[in-house]
Length: 184
Image 1 (cartoon, rainbow, N blue to C red):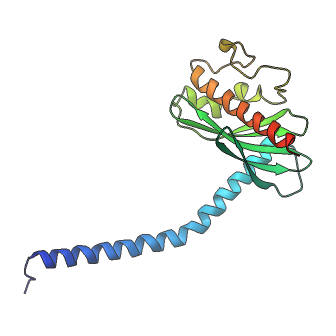
Image 2 (cartoon, helix red, strand yellow):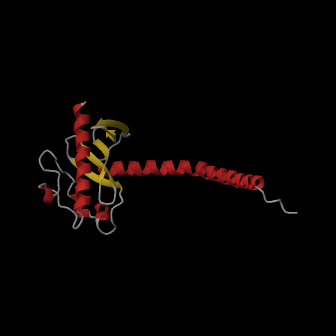
Image 3 (cartoon, rainbow, N blue to C red):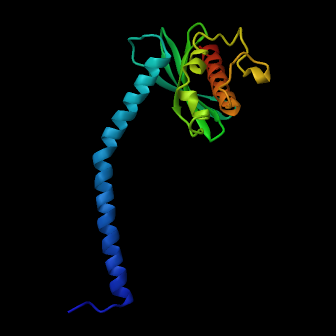
């Protein structure tokens, strides 16, 4: 005999289905949260290794506030700092990790995330000529802005907004470096 269709039966059935689905979702989260955290930590460690000279000490995560914005950075004594910085690109936030050595020179940059247009602004993470121009960059000697704005940075073709965001993120990271080194 089928259950009588009324509001109480429908509410109980819906509640039971929601409870089972919630339990399954919670179980999947519990099983995957550890591996996801480990993968994120490995990605961060690899990014730090790419933006700073070789080091043997454990990077220490620190934060600093500048102009109302809190920046995270990894302090690596003897190598420099790796700053996580972002700026608004054409498609949304462009998030970088920028390595600055103890002499104040940009060691390297790595794109952590972006939402730029594929084939245009997305080249900020693959265009070797664009990325490599920042290696060894000394912001005290060269202007960190695209040539169109009177600076020394060669922009990605047809992606001036992304190039401006990339250089703005590097400039913010350098400002973090100056503040951190000024506080020591």
